[in-house]
Length: 470
Image (spheres, rainbow, N blue to C red):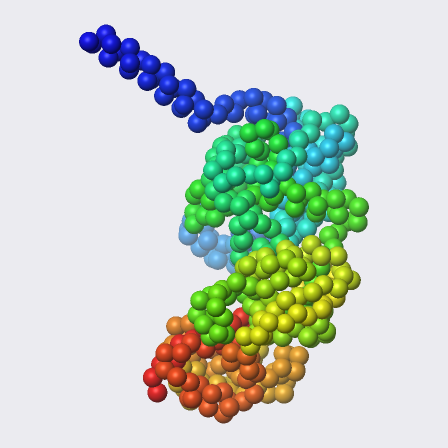
């Protein structure tokens, strides 16, 4: 009986071992074959300053007694505002990978940003000075070139075939430790991050740390599917949330950098935001699908195409816009000069506009800051004290009407509105005057949520605010 039990147990253990081995792949072959195409990138930048923020010399004591010594003899201490200007080198490390055997290398734009010298080290310890072909800050992709031939190169895969839960591997130089291999799984696809509207990131739990930036993300076939770009961290180190740029996005950018030295994108000239349930209710929408237009730049393609703040874009060139992050990618991928149909919801009614897409400016338009002015606290029903803009302030807003917030409290403050903001509109109507605005608010039903169009510095967005009782 005992013998039969042992035999059964051994059979079960054998099956379990087989199943377990299938769950945990062997990464050794991938690391051996692909490691040679991964490079370490060392960046040097010449800095000018008074030494503030520089590392102290190992031979110099860093204490109050030394500072007192400098003060006693009237000498500005290193790092103090009066210290003499110095020239010093700032060095940083990153990763990259060889895209072609003649020396083209992909990395992150932030790795080589403002570099005076870029040195590439291969896994066989050979070093090359690299030339920067171009960099695109909006996608954080850069293309550099070293002089060589017959160099080991990566194989490019299709990130669209990735599945959530699939194993992936990163190779890079975290903290300068060259050819470090880490593994994990795909946690999510098409992830949108704040201020990163042009990249549908691949989220993984692969260990990524400073120095990994620009390195490749491989699938188990040994194909590059992404460029490791950034992490979410409260400590500065890896916390299980890593984000990679899909390789198809990076290849498209690199091809444009190689041929033209820059990236050309479509542009509408609008500000957009996500639609929350409260905003959907305030606009009378049945769902939260679409991109809410919060601002339209004067004389922009959107302005010429009759798009207005408060419109909700639900389709662009036939493509459904489910979330606000879908729109910048769709517009950016459109060739400038193309006329496209844009389906919108305006005051609950559906209509289609025809807009000719422009070319995205290379530099951000400067929006003048708004003077706060004196505070006159005459607080309205939602907790706002407002003031009509002066002609000079309106000029800074390209002639728009608006109401300056001189004090925010109650529901308005809880919703995030603060002193110095400018109220441009209420729901779908423009804010004409303080008197008119306060009358509208006074006539609202208790418990109703209204959408205030707010401008703060360069940003314009709708903020939902709930109406209290009178």
